[in-house]
Image (cartoon, rainbow, N blue to C red; front, top):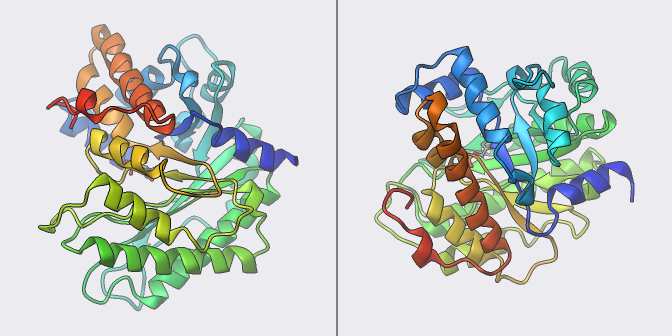
Length: 338
Ligand code: 13P
């Protein structure tokens, strides 16, 4: 197996998922403030250190996605974050995009930027210890959106990024996210996600990207958060598996994002997805659905690090149970977690 395929296979190894702890400084600051924690650099560092040093984290986590700020920092014992993560039995990764900007020619749509200077930046990240990278494209369902040009522009950027990653020896995590926000139905989300994935696949093929060295990070297919409709986990799993049907068999694996679903709901849907016939590993690459309970339990207090770590370990254990067919939603839907 070539080194990229080996890293990609390790990221989607049985019984393991990926921890997304790569929020940009503004996003992380907003999440800290919302949790009542002063949004300082000190607290961002303390929070990330709490997450990655959670005892036993590598039992359910294959890799941790960091933002550039954290990649260059050290944990309290002096080891750089990527070194500590490796020594704790996980793979360090990095967010490589620089966020969304308005896409000219559209009404309110965005394109994800970060292609300028990407190749040298990826080489620097690899030199700092990153083994994989992530790029998130965002699509909003609304009247007239996503438009064909927004789908094309974002899919092409994902493919250029993925190609540059593989040249730099990094496994690309390719993340096209159709947002849950909106009043659309499950079937509207299914159609849009399917169009987006077809375009992304076609661009990846045109750029000659090696699918064996890619992890796809899509949204689950869900009704909009403002829609009246509710979908069961079984309905979500069927619709989600359907949109993945056109992906190449060579793809290393699929790691779903949580997209703002409540933690237990994301886990229940992940468990249902394991029941679907498929040819790739299905796992999780959750941000909020793993870390929100940890942030709430920690509250920015030194004396509550163990409580924060326990909350993260519990969510990881629930998601591993989902991967292994042992998940029991009745034990998980505690009011504060659901
Ligand atoms: P969520 O699981 O919170 O959607 O985050 C995943 C992610 O990496 C967003 O880019």
